[in-house]
Length: 269
Length: 150
Image (cartoon, rainbow over all chains, first blue to last red; front, side, top):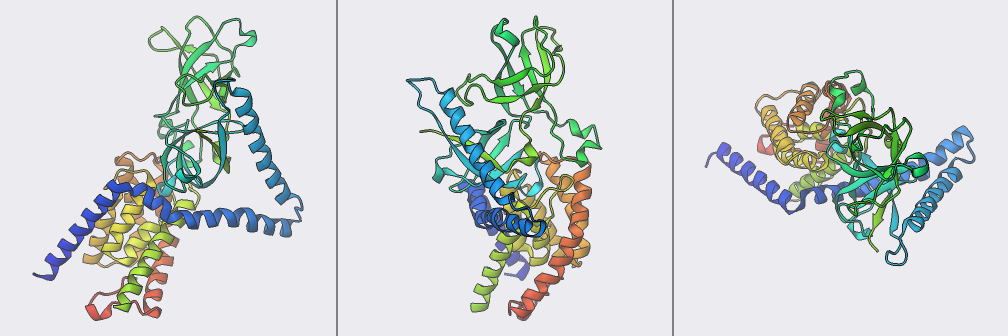
């Protein structure tokens, strides 16, 4: 056997082994392999880097403020959980805090982050993810210590929503929210910065023109996202869609996605 | 035997460190510093396959996307040896375009140019660091005729 043949066979065996490993759970394996380093990086950022900044900039309250902010966020989510439960049949769901470890993976994909909670903490695929400001997205992949969260800005994400109308005289106005899609391709300047495209809400009642800044919340239909979570606000009046049978509108999300440092994942009790 | 074990351990450590660095680093103009590609170029073809596996697993791309690209890059550099610092920018550019063709949600046209720009310092670091570690840690494979890539 020549050296080249041996090399080709070795590469073929390696490729087959990689394929088998992928099928067996490649995502989870890779996520677990980098988890210790990323967790250490997050710990450094929050406990050492912040204190060094406090020292150099004399920001004596920076560490305490960051800790209080996280505690405040956790209390807000606990309050939301208690107020949105339907007694007595449904017990309040548990929201667990998860630090953001990385944004966009190794390719800088815009609509996903990896967080530092996994199946060992009770996180399941499809679980709702939120911040105190509003809905963030859902869990798409899980490993023992990490999870990948897909944002609602992803074009393949669909959320059943409800529009809050003043006084409620128009009854429930339901719609379907979807991510903004690849509109930045057409606007080359926007693709230089991290810009969240407006979301789209569709299948709204044709007879009702909704005003700008109307609040969009989750409807709770489908059982994935709890009812009442703020999703965003209409940017303009709703318009008739191409079929002229329904109305559609653009929504600016309530959550500041690039600034997320911690998210809350809903766990089954 | 000990050298081979140490070499494999060093490769694995370097691979995981490169993956963690690239995953945790911020995206600049839609691209990340291509540590994994730099590692693949500097460390040889088998390591390139493993780096491609990590890139697919952590990059939300289908399996085979980065594995094929990294394997091809590793084989090409083995056939036509070019310093990592020179090879990495065009490879990083092509890799982003390749991943976009496979369906990765990366912003064009900024991301390939950003990746090529970010690849310059990464290539310089890996081009110097990997041969240095090989020589001083006794991991060089000169006895088998394989030239270390710089």
